[in-house]
Each structure stands twice: as C-alpha cells, then as structure tokens.
Length: 107
Image (tube, rainbow, N blue to C red; front, top):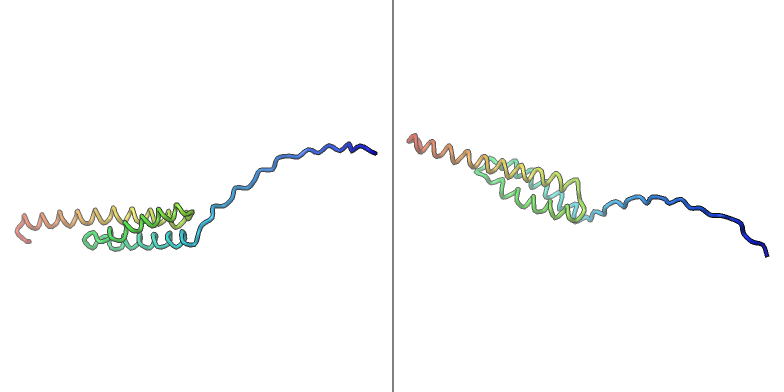
C-alpha cells in the first residue's frame, strides 16, 4: 500500500451576509405607511386632520420595519413624523389665530 503525502490547506472563506427577507406583507405595510404619511402631510392644514393619517402611517411603518422592509418603512416613518409635526403646528396656528380674532372682536 502506498501512503498519501498530500497536504490540504483550506483558507477560510468569508460567508456573504444573507439579505434580510422581506415578506410581501411587510412591503405592503411599508407602502401603505408611506402613503398614509404623505396623506398626513397633505391634510395637515385641515384643522390637524393629518394626524388621523399620520399616526396609522407611523404604526404600519414600524410594523413593516420589524418584518424586514427597510426602504418604504423608513420613508413612511419620516413622512408620518413630518405629518404629525405639521398637523400640530397648523392646529396651534389655527387656535392662536382664533384667539387673536376673538380678542379683537372679529370672531
């Protein structure tokens, strides 16, 4: 019998990181969150009604982020926060103008 004089040296190969799996439900929730966030910005001027759109938008965007969706959930979160801030600012502006108008006797 003959002996094998082979030496095998293996270099470790770095494994590629697995791409996060995005479920279809996560992507749909991210898109809906983004649309609701944009609607929150659009309706912010209507006596703060944008909050009614922005709060569900931010909730759906957070759920979508937990399901693996990153792009639409990030955009949905940003637009929802902007919608909430704009709604609050416009509502405060409306209240201030109403108080000024009442004090001036024009209400």
